[in-house]
Length: 260
Length: 344
Image 1: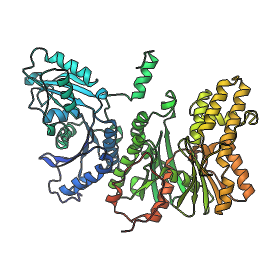
Image 2 (image 1 turned 30 degrees about the horizontal axis):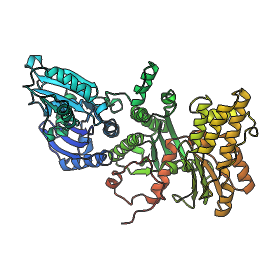
Image 3 (image 1 turned 90 degrees about the horizontal axis):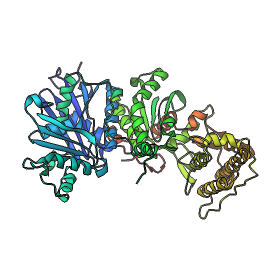
Image 4 (image 1 turned 90 degrees about the vertical axis):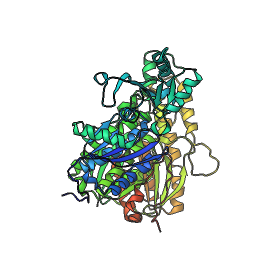
C-alpha cells in the first residue's frame, strides 16, 4: 500500500540526481512531466547538500521514497568527484529502497536543452587539459541519432580544449556563417580560447544553458526506464571518459615516452 | 543495538555489523593493495573509483554474514575523516543515503576514534584512564581517554607517520608493497646493534615524535651499505628498533603521570612484532594491562567504526535531528574532538 498522499500512484516516478558540474540538481519527474526541480550553483556543496535536497524535493511533492520507481543519475562526462557523490548516494538509495538506477549520459541532457542550435559543441571539464568534448549538427530525421534531431560529428572524447578547438576550426572550414554554439561547464572558457586564437564562429550559449538541467535529466531518465534500461544499484557506475592521471603517466612511462 | 560501520578513508573498502559496540557479527574488508602496488603507493583517484565499485557488494556481504537485513540495523556509522577526501566522499555519500532511506541515525566517526575503539571489541573491556598509541601509515599519536569519547592528544608526529617511514624505507630496500610487514619480518633475523638509530632531539613538547630524520638516515645507510643479505637484515632491525624506541619513549612517563589503568595500541603498525613485544614488557613492568587488537582489526576496518559509532550514539545520540546529521561533511584533515552532547 502506498503511503504517499499522491493520488496518481500508478505512473512511474523518477528522482533525478545531477552532480557532474558546479550545479547540484535534483528533480522529480513522472509521465505528466517535471513535478519539481531544485538546483544550486555552488562548487563543493554537493556532498553536504544532495541528500537534504532530495528530501526537500520529496517532501515538496508529497512523495514517499518508496513511491519512486527508479533513480536517474547524470552519468558523465563530468567532475570525477561530482560523479562519485551522485552515484554513491544513488547507490545507497537504490540499495536501501530496492530501486534500480538509470544512467543518463550527461551530454544527452545538453542536447535536449540546446536542441534549437544547428551546430552544437559540448566542452565539459574545468581544467583545460582535462576536458571531454563532443560535436553535433542538426540533420534531417532519417540522418539524426535521437529525438533531439542531432547527428554526431565527434562522439564524447577526452581531448584538451586546445585540441578540440583545432578540430572545430577544421570542421568550420570556410563556412563560419553557421556558427558552432558551445555548451558545457567549460563553454565560456572555450569560446574565449577561440577568440584568442582568432577563430570565428564559436560562441557560447546563454549562461543558463551551460549547465545540465536536472528536470530534463529526469525526463530522459524516465524514457530510458520505460525502455528497460535501468540497472541494479550495485551495477551503476559513472562513465569517467578519462583514466586517472597516475595511470596515464604510468602507461606513457611503460612505453618509454619522455614526460614533460 | 546493531550498527553498520562503513570505512572508505584510504584504500580499503569496509563494511561491518557490530552488536552493542562489542560483538563483531561481520567485518568485510575489500583490500585494494594489488591495484596500487605497481604505483608504489595509493593513487587517490583509483582508490575512489574502486570504493564505488565494491561498496554495495561489501555492504550486502556484511549484512548477509551477520544474518541480518538492512531493516534490522539501528544505525549507520561512517568515517568522515581524516583520510583521502575523494575516498571519504564515497563512503559518506552512500551512508547518508542508506541512513535516510532506512530511517535510522547517521553517526559520523573520526578515523582515529575508530582505531582506538578496535580495542573495545576484545574479550576484556579496557578501563579508563586509557593511554592510546595510535600508529598507522597516516598517524602516530598518543591519546589519553578519561572516559568514552573524551580524547586528549598528548603527543603526535611533527612530520612523517611511523607507518609511512616503515613503508618508505621498505620500498627503497626493495621489500615489496606495502613494505612495513616485510621489513618487520626481515628485522626479526637481524642485529639491531650493528646500525644503531638514536632518539632524535625534538624541541617543544617532549611527547611529540619526529620520524623524517630517522627515515633519511636509514636511506643514507642503505645507499652507502654493501647491500648483502646480512646488511639488509641488520639495517631493518636497527631501523625498526629506532622507530619503536621512539614510539614507546614517552609512554612510561605518561602512564605514571596520568595514572592510566591501561595501555592500548591500535592502527596498522600495532601489528609490528617488536612494538607488541616491547609494549608488553613495558605494561608488565608498570603492572597495567596492554590492549592490542587482533591483526584484522589493526588495519582499517568497518567494525571499529561501528563500535565507536555505538558508543558515540549512546553518549550523544538524539541530540540532533536526522536532517541535521545528513548535512554531514567530510574533511581530509578532520581534527579529533571529544564527543559532546549538542545543547540547544
